Length: 80
Image (cartoon, rainbow, N blue to C red; front, side, top):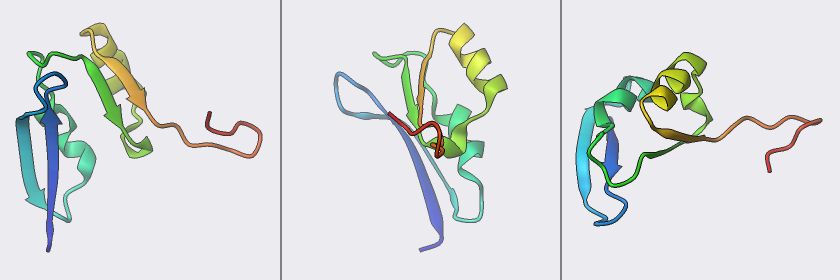
């Protein structure tokens, strides 16, 4: 319907803590930092390979987040 939704859900309570809605034309990665919540009960971050950004990962890891971003597989190195 022409919109995009990004959320942060609490691991323990299963409640949405933060939400960002925009037009579908806006790139997903622009929402990434907006939905992060340092008060969440988990510091695990799960995202698909479109969010791979080594500077962002380094900065967030330094802030205590644990990154679980899917990596792109290749013929010589499949995703495990």
